[in-house]
Image (tube, rainbow, N blue to C red; front, side, top):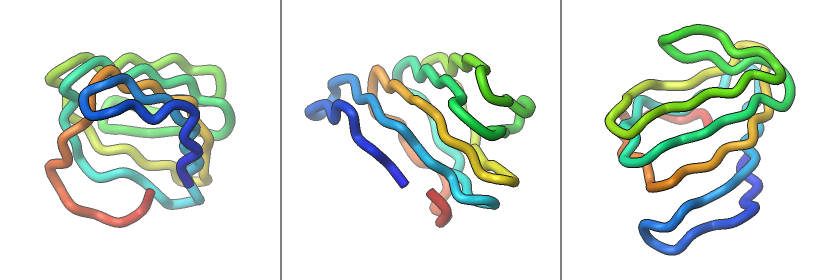
Amino acid sequence: MVRWLSKGEAGAPTVAILEYAPGAGAPRHRHTGLETIIVLEGIQSDENGDYPEGSLIFNPPGSEHSVWSEKGCAVFIHWDQPVVFIEAEDGL
């Protein structure tokens, strides 16, 4: 589930709270701007590791990853610019 806190116009920053159900995830994507994440509850995972509650994650422009949560999680997320999805998958 996505709870939009500030949905920017095209190319503008966006802020949301993402709630991942157990086993859910987001497909592989590339960041065109800085993505900043704070894990509010649960554990978010990507190819670089597992991030428990309280983790602060920075994904710089040009970085790529997919995201998942085995047991579910909630994150506060800020995108400077939109992401570009590389793989089409269900789950978020």
